[in-house]
Length: 431
Image 1 (tube, one colour):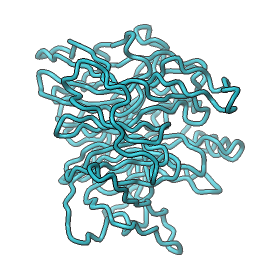
Image 2: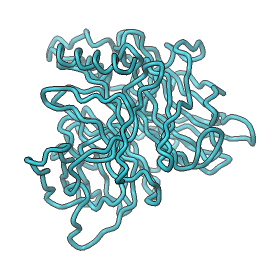
Image 3: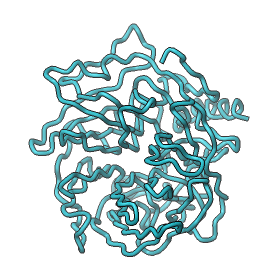
């Protein structure tokens, strides 16, 4: 089945040159959709990690036995609970066997120490409590209490024409569904979650990007493109977590609104994606369509919306920023969807530094050298999006303890003239 799946994806990409399913988990070079990072240290004239990486090492496929593919969220387990071990990498799938977006229902568990992959969650496609059903997104976290919370942005035809409002799903660490959260403030949970986890309580920050988004066939008569609907929000959920019971929502507050969102035939929809919480309680968000990074002050405590917040950086080297992370020295890393580059932003000086992931296995064409090497020491990057063949994208950037065996760079790769789709695990024992 997986071999047939790989062939069908290749045929579809050659035929339409539109979508390819990003379905592999690598350690090596090029941009990704998820950075599971980071231990960072400033040094004088650091040599830079990315410029020295010239190859990928396949770790595992994320295609499941039911054919789900297109990995979106990537998180590292903070604790051992149920089937999951601390340090395991959890990855969900956005597409089903038919490669339709908004239909994936599975989460895999990759153990970096044993290099074994297992299926930890397999939900039904139709779930009456979740408006529209199940299509797992980048909005996922695992709490210290062992509970997994993941967003659903569902569709039945792979486009926003048939999308539902979706929901947030609460799962126990054995993959069993425990609760479903839906309501007027929850409309297609889309981007990375930022989390404050205190054990018995937690606070989640989630972008919602589905309010009144039409199908991709709807066009703005003035531009000829899909209309931008400025209704996306950032929602804060405060949770109580009783011992032995699922989390429950104690309050919910829209802390930012007015961000652009729109349908996209290739990538389902585009909206605010990256969220990163700073030590001063400022929440940074990537506003993809406006090509900017914004700051939302007092994110854990504010009682009103900050609108679109304060613009930290716009334009320059940013090219539709998606994934976002705050480094230990206070810089932001943003991953561009349109050119496959990682941009470092010095928040207080608004200066950009660029690095570009090197091509896989191309010894005749050395990777582009950054103007100033990023001080990456332990980075895991994951490709998570269906993109045009000439594009790259990154959806998630998450923290990873540098002692974990899962360090390096991870990404899928699409060559300019063909789809690289390996559907079986392949390990390099030298690493």
